[in-house]
Image (cartoon, rainbow, N blue to C red; front, side, top):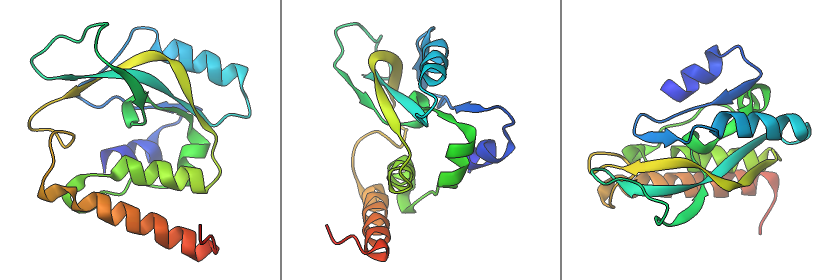
Length: 156
């Protein structure tokens, strides 16, 4: 709900979020602003990052991976609004998977910058930690994506 509220209220041409347990590297915003300015046809950028467990210090030796999350994203506000709200599925997992799927279905061009710009903290009490009964949200997200594809007549 907070992401959707922020999306509705922001008055800037670019939009970025930072989840409370994640960290941006100092040059993240500048790098993404520069890349969006240099690529006016592109709708947004995510970035590479490293995940680390709460209670540990992130290091340059942690695995680098693509981070498709709120904290890694910078997007043109009008394009983010065109995708619509961030919907909390049951179990509160899969909200951004659903949002990015809807962005792809709307043909938004969100690219991955090949640079580590985000550190994603995984805490035992966070929604990203572990697996269990709350994972039902992922099933709802997958079904919603399939339903959208069927409605468009895309059987593949």
